[in-house]
Every structure is written in structure tokens, then in C-alpha cells.
Length: 567
Ligand code: ADP
Ligand code: MG
Image (cartoon, rainbow, N blue to C red; front, side, top):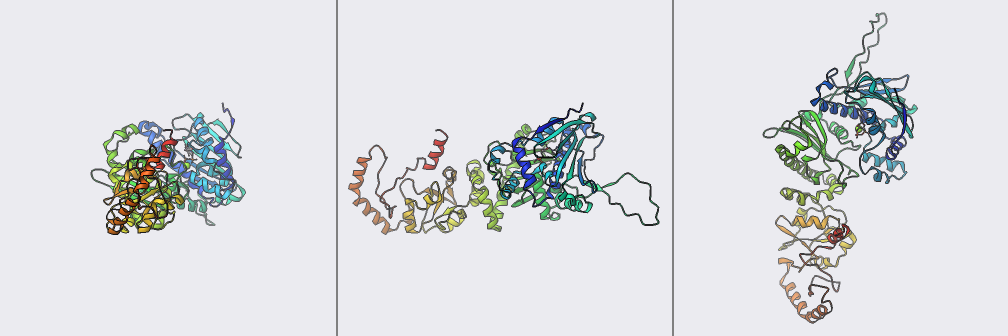
């Protein structure tokens, strides 16, 4: 029995759909990229399931995607023979958005279509992009392994609801039928579709096919008997990462990124490598040009798309990169791991750690290269992900030196909030005899910049890093030193400007200490139980007094973090 039902979309899905219909006009043709991307994912998933159930592939082993169109009807269909969906999966996958944090993310929507279109880009567009060009979308699908009467027909022609019913469907896989809007009828055209496929989907690993264009029958020539329609591949149909670097155009790398990262924007940079020898794998790693909304969400999906000998195994394999590189997207294709590898096996396999450590270096080197090649592009990266990189020194002691070189800071050298000074820059500007890398931590740039602790440093022309991110105090605690120079909080402990203290300065300090002796005793008496120690100092120029925490104490930022955590 067909059992036709109407369903409402989940609130977030509805919002996304609404935006798709009303905001994403600038680049309509991406609908095809998204639907082909899904069809390709469906083929990957089927191949993976067939590893343990080969019968799933048997009667139709050649995985492919077919694009057909009907100019008169104004329709386009995208058909795959991949994994397909059950009725429940259709409702789950096409009626809801499962990614956690979506609801709160959607609250950022402004109603301003331009801004919102930008936001969904960050979110990934996906299946609903069909509604950019279609006012009615139908999906016919049958889960691999299910019987012919388990086909499902999904249909939606508005923002409010969709219907699902069971139908007879002859084969496994999914067919998406787009009934084009009047202003999108132009897409029902062979030449147009072919060029869009070439442009966005050339890298798809299985054939994306269209009907062969028939040669027009010349006059006088007899029309041959009609044959079965013949399809031909329009794309290159080879997994991109298996090709040699020199054969791949930047544009192809970019489109491949959008497919695997489910991103809307171009990546900032990438690194494609084949490794042979003790380990045998290919990796293609990308740095996104935009931070995902769930970058700081603990349960957010992260990691690489894992293939073993070209066969897709899993999305979001998080074992191959440390947490502080969680923004990296990409593909790992291993020849060492077993085809039946699971997350549990991965955790134990000794190849995993070896690959992880190699990929970590690869990413750090890629970033280092970007920094030296293109400071502006690197600055974009730092502004997006700098705070995540700062988790690095604590998590990954072995690469501390490499990470340190990637850091960028705001400092008294520029006195600007922009974090664009490297530690190498700082060290290069250190004064004769200066032993420490000085920093001050504060809640915001204005406070840091006008900190009384800086007075003496400004007077002496010694540069101080201005640390104003929440993570900074914790992070700098793990940095400890760079290039043999220890980090020193200017607000902590006795101020030792090292050799930078000239004889003259020393004489002045001793004079001040002597002169202030009586005052110090008096203040000590008054503040007896409230402070540990009272000292005369030359660290201030204009301010009469300042509070200093001792070397071992937590700084104010750290204290606040712990307070917030209820400690
Ligand atoms: P994403 O691809 O980022 O997961 P989409 O919105 O593109 O998000 O697709 C939503 C989900 O619908 C997919 O994750 C998949 O489970 C399902 N889906 C979409 N298209 C297909 C298809 N052709 N075959 C099987 N499942 C599909
Ligand atoms: Mg998708």
C-alpha cells in the first residue's frame, strides 16, 4: 500500500529551504554540482557497503550518474545507481538537518537576503539547492538491497511541506527530477548541462553521463531503425587525487574541495602528496577560506574523508589530524589500512599514528609556505583560525617550534589590534641584551595598549606583545619560549629587563628603592593581609602604583575562565 503522507519540514530545514528559494540567485548553476556531489557520495556509500555485502552490487556493478533533460517539459533529472534511501531515510535526510548547533546558527539569520545567502554558504547548501531552479522537486529512490515495492516517491512544491509515498521502483538508487521554474528553463539544454558538468563535476570519480547527441539525419538518407539510447561520460571520471599534480588545474582542485568539504567557497590553499615507502598513501589537504559555525563545538564533525585503495571508507575520520588542525578538510587514500577498517581499528592501527604525524607536519609546512609566499592570504588564515592554532603548543609538544613560527600577534611595535607580527619579527627587533619575549594579557586591545605595565617598556623602546584573546594566557603558559627566549608576562613578578638595564638605570632603580623605603613599609603595614609583597619599582613612568601578580599565580584571564567554569 502506497501510504502517502504529508510532512512538515523541521524548522531549520524550512529556514534553509526558504533562503534557497529566495536568496541564492547569484549562481544558479551550482544546483547541478550539489546534486551530482550527492549522487557521487551515494555511489561511495554503496561501494563501501558492498565490501561486506557484495550481492548489493551484483546485478548492476557499474556505478554511474546520468543527467537527462526534456526541453518541452522543462525538466532535468539526475539519476544514480548508488545506495538509495529507505522511506525513513528520505524523511530524515531530506526533511531535517542533522548537524548539531544548526538551530542556534540559524538565529544569526538577519532577514537581509544578501547577508543570509552568505551565511548559508558557510553552512553548505546541498540538496535544497534544487529549489534555486525548480519549483517542484521529486525524488524517486530505492535502498540497495530493498525490494522493488520498497521504492519511495518524495515530492515537494513549496516551502511548507512535502509528501512521501511508497512506489514500485525498478532499480536501486536515486532519481531527482527538477521541474524548472520559468526563469530557469534555459538549463534544460544539452550544451548548457554539459558545460556545467565539465566546469564543476569533472573531478567526480565515476562517470557523469548524458545521452549521446545524435547526428542530424541528412536529407535523402534513410532513417536507421531506432536503437536503445546511448549514454556517454561527460566528465573525466577519475578520482582527482589519483591523478598527477602536474595534470590537475587549480580550478579542478577548487571544485573538488567544494565537493568533499560541502563548502560553497574556494579553499585558501591545498597540498597534494603521494607517499610511497614505509607508508603508502595519498593525501590532499585543504585550508578553507571560511570558518565553520561549529568550529568551537566539541561534537562538531571533523577530519578527513578516508579511502582505502580508492574505496570510500568513511567521512570525518578524525584520527589523522590533531584537534588544533580540525579546520583542515581533505582526502586520505591509504594502501596500508585494511578495507574492513572501522573507527575502533583505526584507533589501534599503528599506521594511524604514523600517518597522523606525517599529515600534521604536512599541514604545518603548507601553512608555513603560505605565510612566506603570500602574507595577505596567510593573514586571512590567521584571522580565521589563529585561535585554534594557539591550542597547538599544548596539544602537540613535538611540533612546538613549527607552530610557534606560524603565530601572529598584535604588539607595541604597531600598536594596532591586527595580529600580524610573528615571533621571528619580534626576535629580530629585540634589543641588545634583551633576554625575554615580553607580553601583556588583557581582555581587549584598548586595555592592553594602555596598560600601566607597558610604561617602562615604551620608555625604553622594548617591544611587548599585546595578548587579548581568551585563550592567550593559557596558550602562552604552554609556549614558555621561542628561539631560546623565554616568554615573560610584564605584569608578573619582579621586572627583570635583563642586560637591558644599563648602569644608569640600575643607579636610578637603587635610588628609587632607597627613597621609597619608608613609603613601602607604610603601605605594607596597611595592606598587610591583602598583598604578598610591596616593592618600589621603576616599571612605571606615569602611573603611581600597579598591582602585580607573582610569577606562580594565575593571571586575570585565566582566573576568569576558571570562575566561569565554576571553579
Ligand atoms: P550533505 O551532502 O552535505 O550531507 P545534502 O543536503 O546535499 O547534504 O544531502 C542531504 C542528505 O540526503 C545526504 O547526506 C544523503 O544522506 C541524502 N541524499 C541526498 N542525495 C542522495 C542520493 N542521490 N542518494 C542517496 N542519498 C542522498
Ligand atoms: Mg551534498
